[in-house]
Length: 189
Image (cartoon, rainbow, N blue to C red; front, side):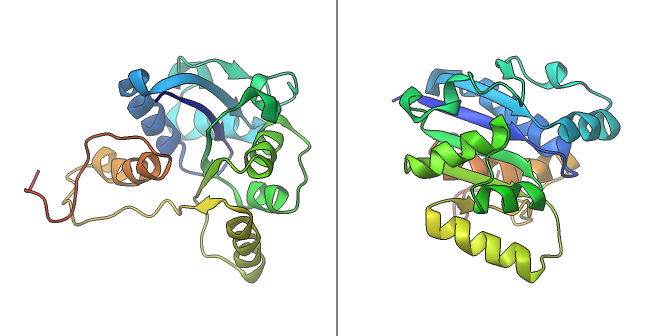
């Protein structure tokens, strides 16, 4: 069954995670009914700084302005299945945790929670303080998945791209996508 998904990108360092997510989603087109994308203004700045790219350079999916409350995924009636925020700042975590939906990105996350749909937050900042942990607790209680951008090493990644993909593969599995990736206990890659 094809999924309707939303991808949010915030200004946390780690634009490479968003880039790799879009690259992987391009290979999963047969599993996607619709995909809408929203960038925070700081995400655009960080993307340009870290990767020397603009938002339209990293995805061909439709991009909605963060002020566009007429985007389909701003309403539960559009029946989107999943939202992934990658990377996700702690400020965004706090706003979502406390229902402060003052832009499209946080409104879409709020819709996912109220509709009991999947919300995966790929948090990138560290270390965590008590406020972050309390916000995680609120979000997990509301049904969100907190997925720190913590790469794994048991697949023996040989490049930064391969290391980043360990996180993105996990995110896509959490979001319910079936795709080939390293599995512990399976044959060596």
